[in-house]
Length: 180
Image 1 (tube, rainbow, N blue to C red):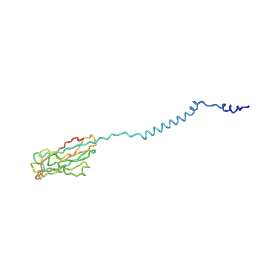
Image 2: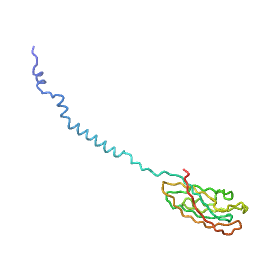
Image 3: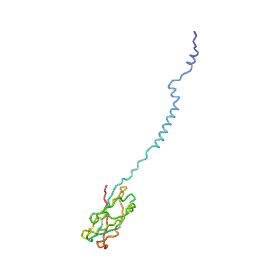
Image 4: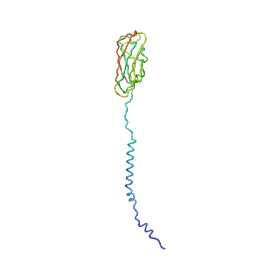
């Protein structure tokens, strides 16, 4: 019986590579693929990264009390103009004053308050002895502010009158407070 040794020797004659050498020979391809994956991840991270958060100033609310001082004369009517010069401030409401004669909100144009300017006017037909004399709060204007910026106003008392409709000498001043 004859065995074919050449076929056995042919397969054994071919040198086989050790497993570590097979790994080493593929190393440049693996390193290149790994580098490509890292590059793609780095680029994708920049694309999907969140934008930095810019903190907006917190909105707050302020109240501006409007006072008229009619000295010794009874105050029966008034008209005044108030303008807010801050760009980040909006007029959001108007309420009446402390005296029963001016407890109801004064008359004003709702469209005008959107422009940060308002003309307020009120009158009372109460008896002269029940009208306010001296310094009295005639209205409160509520504002929404956009930040901690100081409020700046322009204001003018356009008219003040007694119960007979005569012009009286009066002065106007404002006081600001925080409602939130």
